[in-house]
Image (cartoon, rainbow, N blue to C red; front, side, top):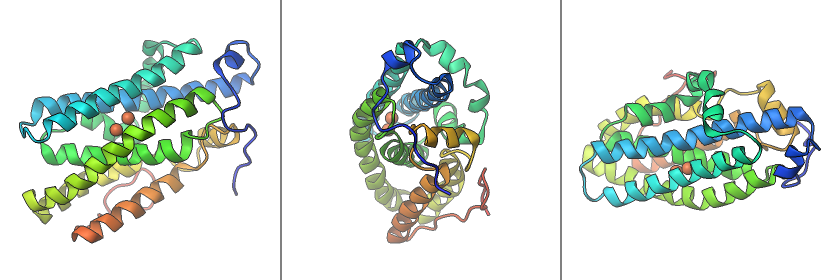
Length: 252
Ligand SMILES: [Fe+2]
Ligand SMILES: [Fe+2]
C-alpha cells in the first residue's frame, strides 16, 4: 500500500530544524539519510581517486579527474547540509559504521578500496553513477527538506554526465575486452549495484516516505535500474545476470 506523504516538497529548512519547529524524529531520520548520502558520495570520490592511481589509459584520465572533482563537490554539499543542522563530518561518518558493513554499501566500499583497472571503473560507474542518478533524481529532488532538494538538483546535472560516460564506455568495453569479459564483470558487480538501493520495505524507508524525504521504496528504484540496464545489455548482446529475488541479492 502506498505511504501517504505528510510533508510537502521543499517546505522545511535548516532554521526549522535548529529552532526545533519539526518533530525530532524527522530530524533523526533526515540526519541518517543525509549521512548515508554523504558517505556514498565520499566513497565514490575515493574510488575515482583510486582509479587515477590504477588506470594508465590516457584517454580516460580527463573524465576520471572531472568525475573525481564532482564527486568531491557532491560529498561536500551534503556534509555542509549536515553541518548546518549541527552534525560534523566525523560524527556523520561515525554514525554510519554499521551501515558501512551492510550489503547496500558494498559497491561504494569496493570501488573506494579494491577496484582496479578499466572494467572495474566502468562497472563502478554503472553501479554508482547510474544508481545515484535514479536515487537522487527520483527520491531527493522533491525532498521535504529544501536544502537536500537543492543539493540534489546540482548533483543530478553532473550525475547525468557520469551516466552518459558509463553508457558510452560500456559499448567501447565490449569492443576492447570482448563480450565474455564484460559479462564476467557484470556478474561480479550487478548484485552489489542492485543492493546499493538498500533493503525493501524497512521502517526507515517508511518514515522517509511519510516525511517526504523519499518518494519511492528502494525496491521500486532497484527495478527501474535493472529494467534500464538489462535493456542496454540486450542492445549490446550482453547477458544481464540473473539475481536471487530477495535482498541482499546474489547471483541466482
Ligand atoms: Fe555523486
Ligand atoms: Fe557520479
